[in-house]
Length: 434
Ligand code: SF4
Image (cartoon, rainbow, N blue to C red; front, side, top):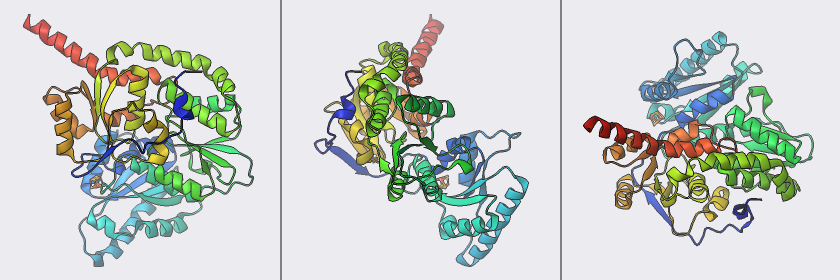
């Protein structure tokens, strides 16, 4: 077994680690962004954003909608109106939904996704969803959640969506142990990880979100759940309220993280570590091989994380422990301690952990550190590049399949790519000047 496995075995106490908490101007996308990966995952769901032209613009440009495709998301634009006009807005919403469902018989689940314009906040979308659900049941299930940009960051859209699904999950008919894997993963990654879990000896495994609306897994007292993403705090709470038990674990990023994640599941199901070692040996060797290619590029480089995707802490752990990068600051919009305990505990001593953001102060700290790489949102990347600082867009790490052994090398490559690009550009400039 990998010598670094103690990331799952140690008592996790981050209370000794100082955390810099900031509340100020933030530079993040809103929760609507999650629709981009959620609509690919739940293949018969439709996401109807109830929002403004800004929301429509964000969602269209983020998704790069092709005009020939039948998209599975759209925006119902609510223009400015007073309270007296809200009855009309509800009627319009019912009409739009009716037209959509008549034209698209393939839709089995419809999400009304709230946004932050004041006209939308005035609308009671949960009431609208239950009204529409009654109208269109049983053909279509209508649910709602908020992707509002007020006080949320972009991965919270997925958390809100999955938390809205939990009350819809059927009650388990047996207390027999079963495992739920929670969080959107690319189908190929999900297949790899669930295959490994089965090979360990866990028989009853299901995933949330499901690939189809009628495949919502059952939940009950025998359900244990393992998070595949660190930003699902509300979903975890909703599952616990349904009697499921959380399996605390590191996240399946890199060879070590994936082994720790599998080992946590195995331990919860009474499977010993030797079985994990046997089942994972070949895949771990492939992961190590994948990582070895990029270690020479990344080792010793200093990295600074701005808060954005909520993946920052597991990524920092991966870069530091598996690729030898040096962490300067690891910022995250929210540090969910109960979910991140193993990850925080595995970070090296002395790294600055920050939660929330005051962007100008953080930029000052970043400039003072002069890191080799900054992981940040799109809004900060261009100005930092203009200052000569190499950046990596954090949103790319959410859109890309990065979990599991087979993706460990790809994950390292995502961080190596900006250095390779910069070197190539420098070579081109040098060549041109000769
Ligand atoms: S939900 Fe708010 S932050 Fe997001 S695109 Fe719409 S207006 Fe902008």
